[in-house]
Image 1: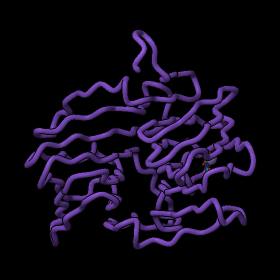
Image 2: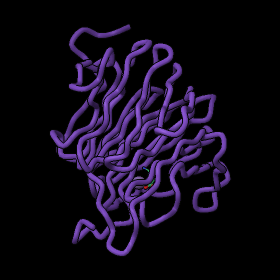
Image 3: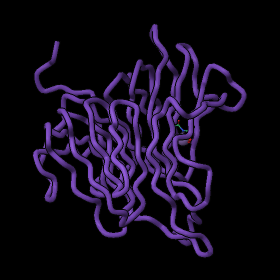
Image 4: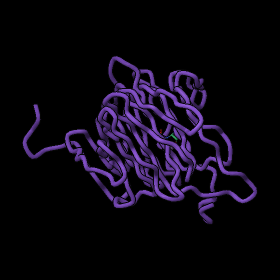
Length: 248
Ligand code: UGY
Ligand code: MN
């Protein structure tokens, strides 16, 4: 039962834990019949944004800002992604990487929800811009994380220096932890997609379940242990392939 005046949501200077009961929807200029829940943004100290987009049938989501790259992951419904050459029908599990300033449209064929991750793209001297990617997560292979077959990591984007973001699906068998408390320069934006467990962020331990979202700032000590009857799966973003000193 929901307790009046209480929530599991907590926002701190270097991490945030956001639960669905605290979501607030708002329209976004350039989106039609669609609203966003802005879960993570520079207003909390992050260097990227992460939204849930709620799109009505025939609604659409406008382009990202100038110079801003975008990753989308479809949660449910059916979206038509048009890259100018071909249309792809995207249901749950489909995802796209849209390079900064790419031309494309996203329209909902039925009421749909997706996760969006956006940040200013950091070009890399000597390399071309990255390419658009439209894929389904079932087409990607996972691999054991640091030798543990019970922790399977699936990279959704190529291991290629042109890409300055990584987005992964991490699947844990119940009882499986991250092998150590990580502390690193990369940020994360995370959504629990299935199952749950306990997430350590700084000196806090949070019970986590499907629908919960986390921002981890640079150097936020982080650890996870999966609990329950089903595998825990989370989707997460990290900034990669750029010099932290030079920002490129
Ligand atoms: O890629 C990562 O840094 C990952 N192992 N972090 C995490 O799951 N919190
Ligand atoms: Mn990490």
